[in-house]
Amino acid sequence: MTFPSVYEMFTPIGTIPKQHFWEWFSGDSLNSRWTNHGSSSPTYVMNDAVDGGLRLTSSGVGNAILGFNNRTQFDVGQCTFIAIFRRNSSNQYATAGIRNSPPSSGNAVYMLMDTGASNIQLLNNGGSPTTTVTTTPIHTNWTTVKIENDRANTTIKLSLDGVLAGNGTSTTNISSSAGQPVIATLPSSGSATTTCDVRYIEAYNT
Picture 1 (cartoon, rainbow, N blue to C red):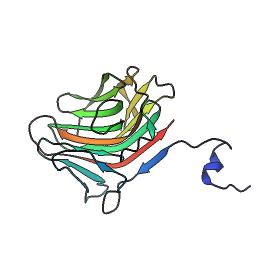
Picture 2 (cartoon, rainbow, N blue to C red):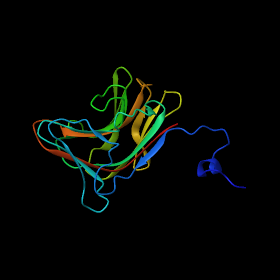
Picture 3 (tube, helix red, strand yellow):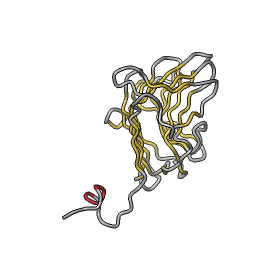
Picture 4 (tube, rainbow, N blue to C red):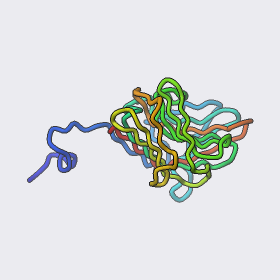
């Protein structure tokens, strides 16, 4: 039997494919489908190191916010987001997830590492914010972040390095808005320069 596409080899006939994309952050420069939403002249350059990926750098009191060119192709409450991500310093607010508008924390779900807290947090906002503090301490190691939202807009789960985070589930204030992948870094206080690295992002509607 022959198939017109790889998709039809593994998917029942008539099933409409949902939005699904990957980004490896390889090559000499950032793909133009990503957009700067930061302030005070942030930079986004390839990190010249083995598996370095892309480095976001905030300057002074500004922030570095990388969005998907305002292409809101994913349902904040019914999608899965995966990123390989690293926060590089103390006094830093670094985050990865899905947002409707990259500079805004409204209508969003994301993982947060913030010096103001001891542990990694899961934040979701469907009109009002909900903060879920996990049992995993913040750190500066490469981390595989996975945020899973069920098909009923009722449960969000945060996994870190393939394991469901302790206390990493939220069931309140889940947004039903469309969203896009967003990575961001900024100083927690003062005017320090901060960096974070990302070498992979995947997102798909469920």
